[in-house]
Amino acid sequence: MPVRGRVFVGERLQLAREFNDLTQKGVGWQVAASHALVSQYETGKRKDPTHDLVEAFADVLGFRPEFFYETVNDAFREEECSFRHRRSTPERLKTQIRAHATLLGMVIERLSSHFKFPAIYVPKIPASTPEEIESAAEQSRRHWNLDLEGPILQIGRVLERAGVIIVPHVVPSTKVDAFSRNGATTVIFLNQSVRSTSRWHFDIAHECGHLVMHAGMSTGDEETETAANRYASAFLMPRNAFARDFRTVPFSWRHIFDLKGRWRVSAAAIVKRAYDLGLLGAVGYRRAFQYMSKMGWRTNGEPQEPEFQPPELLVAALNGLGSRVDMTLQGLCEGLHFAPETFEKVTGVRVPELKVNPVDVICFPSAAQS
Amino acid sequence: MSPLLYKSFMSLHFEPWSKYPPLLPERLRIVAGIIRDVRRETVALHEADAGDNEWSLGCRVYARTVHAFQEAAEKFEWLTILPEYEKPLRFTFAIGSVPIRFYRGEAGDPPGNYVSVSYAELYQQQLALQIDGIRLVDQILRLAVEVDEKRDVSGVSVVEIDKQGSVTETYKIPFDVELETVAPLRSKPIDVPPPQLEPVKNQDERKKLKGRHAGSR
Image (tube, rainbow over all chains, first blue to last red; front, side, top):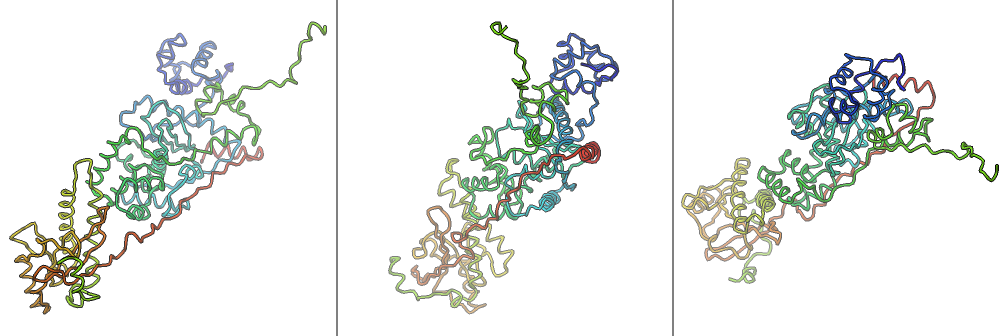
């Protein structure tokens, strides 16, 4: 029930609408209002929607009416977010993901009062030239007590231990690989609808590059994306150790896939790294990519994908509800004023229906007994 | 002469540097290394599916080896490239004052066209005599590049050939690092422990964390 005397927050209406990938016109049509009216409520030009209209907004958008009467403490602003995406990614998809992230931020904020999440421990090292980026990646490894020699088996854990929450989100689009946010809650969203574990490893390292090198900077342009790619390569495959491995035997695809299994990155990333480090000439590099295209690996995915350690922090917190802390999943969902199906969309975790305890049920006496 | 017979004429342990002082072991190893590495890199680029064949591979290996020698000649003062004006594709180099050519084939069976002496080589032989007192009139030197079934270099030998084209001495150059004997030095993968998530114990701690989340985190 909307609480009398409390202010309707238009920003929350916009957030809920964007999360559902609806236009103002689309929402207006569903609640039998004009798009202009929806716009006025969102921008705060009108502040007093009727009880029925709020109920309709809540029903259509998958929230409880109370959701619209609380402030947005920590909105994911555009300048805080980095998207690893294709150039053709629609702006609307990015908006939807940002809304999803903001809702997830609300979940994490609430969980933070019940669990001690690791404190943020990400180095800030601005870098732009290849040498600076290589150095930033090496410094990052040292910062997290990782030597400069070995492949990292669980890249996600490195970030999660540093307080970055990784969310395996499902976006029905392969146009966005990953997304990160460097703010009060630092999050990496991983698009697992792109079915490639080697890419997920690289995506996490790429977003890590943005968090390390581009704090407070606007990203998404070619320069910052190239820098983040170089960082990811350098972080996952430190130059000396990788060069030593690469040179052990002459170039062959068998060797590349052997390296792929060891370094847990794609064959394409290995070939690119070898080229960047001067271990493979321009002709060899071009040939290798031609071969990969011919084999269909660039479009249909590569063979011999490595194992992937799924993100653990958020799942551990959600699974710990009810058992490790005095809050249940249902309680969390209700406190956030999310509909159960919305909670599932946001977190990937289903809210179980409350089971009725038979002891609490008083049976009507049967006809025979009476 | 059959390859089996030539061996009977050879001394037991031919050491090129004792007869031809500029052919020091370390220099020979560098030269053999260039030949081996260039071939290995070129073989990696071979694409039979795209139309490459043994002829194209041979041409490419030869051109790249010549190029690598030219680059090495700028680095090592003991290595020079001889100008072959009569046949520009012929490649002759000199270690110190000693002229040498290389061919692909067995050490005991040099191809006929590699037994002939060009004007550039003849001129260098005279210089060897004048500079180092090395008499090369009756002998010529070649490097035999032997290749295995994977098309990689299996061995490079110094071959001494007499006027009649018969092999009189051979010496197999040891590589600095034998590829087959190198066990890959691989560092251990880093196994990262899972992140720790502790429940908040009491109300005070909860308030403190809430404040931290909204502020500095």
